[in-house]
Image 1 (tube, rainbow, N blue to C red):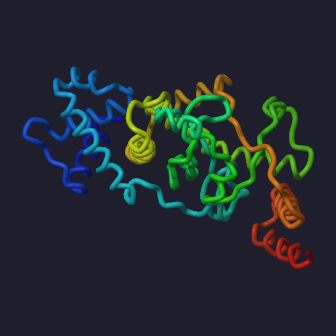
Image 2 (cartoon, helix red, strand yellow; image 1 turned 180 degrees about the horizontal axis):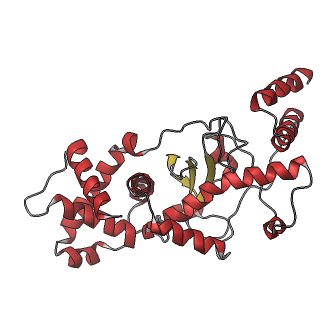
Length: 305
């Protein structure tokens, strides 16, 4: 976070949430202690020596700033705007009306011994299942938290927007000499290209906040609230910093192919209407048919069934 962004964050917390300098700790130090814990995953005893404060003071001001950040969610959460029909972005050109991309990620947490079974994911670690929706500019617009790591993705998605799953670009297309051979492959390519934004957003979020990369020492309720606060601060930094050096570093890491393979839903139960809808959409995407014509064809298809 740049100095200008840090100063503006302190100003917003002061004017919007009423945070003030305490008798012994200025507001800037309160915010700095909070960001230090999130960005470097420092424990209170470490922050205590860095800022020459007691552990009780560090904990008190951490939770004070955390609560203030969460109350700013109407200001910091992005308002989704549908993709216009005349978009020139190659990734979103065939996604008129789309609000963004949706995916989930696992974030490791610490829980009580009696709760470990509910939070244990398939690979064995203890984590929460976090669903995220972001717009094309990598701003979070919807981040529900609290699902245990053992929760099936289908159950998490049931409370959110339904999306196609398991559509990824085959590795051979990256060679540049093999193109999609039919409308299904072309649609898969376009869909995966647009959906890639949420994967990059999660990578950037975890790269920015070290507290999301390993289990935290806070209780599970605070850990869930910290996840939301990190997403809100991510949006704030994206808004205030036109150039984000961390994004360049994350993109370079991804280009080297060192990113961890993510788990995803490979299959979903379908029906005749869904199959017809997907077939029409892929054909219209490849042929460049106007989206309004696609919905007319979809209506005809559904009336026949």
